[in-house]
Image 1 (tube, rainbow, N blue to C red):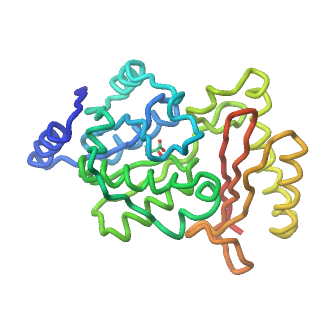
Image 2: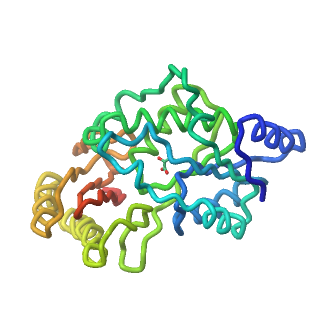
Length: 279
Ligand code: PAF
């Protein structure tokens, strides 16, 4: 497995693969890898001849009071795991490589960035869209894979690929969960032992909400149920919403493909999760 740091080295390597007619898959990450990321790499290998993973803690997607400085950096361990999974190339740029000091361009996916995480994390999705666009331009993969735990992020990236006519196939990979149901996330490492034991309640409440819908409760009633269950269990609610899966607009009676989206704080840790269902 090669580890490269510059744009020209990445381009050169990928160009050689392209010249040999090889298909390239790309998995962008911020490192501190867990089983969810490794699942993305495994899936990437099923769709391409070569797999590129980037590890870059992107400063522009963190708000001023967020955890950019504390975000766990574990590149050595990450690279060992990636090599063991059969990853071909790791792109490990520094901040100046991605953001030249005189950079003036950013990408804003206006509508789908607005609500949910976009409402509580101002500028977050502009940072995500900008860095993903830059990484796509550097790596120029045929296919890119993202975890569906960050479902709004996936819709933002789908929208930018569509709007900018990027010739990249996107694949969303289902959330990987701990045995007790907690969605895997690099931020789970912030949880205290007590909080970690409590955190699976989020997924339990999503599942119970789904049961209520199947039993005939209205979307409105289920949203009220979930919000009160989350807050009574001591989570600080950011949002709970049932939305249309295609564009994250509030669900209406005519919509069949839906998703429940939730974000809460437990202690100082922000956790998100979701559950897909069809009516
Ligand atoms: O999901 C993530 O890890 C990040 O938001 C991403 C897509 C790598 C962009 O920095």
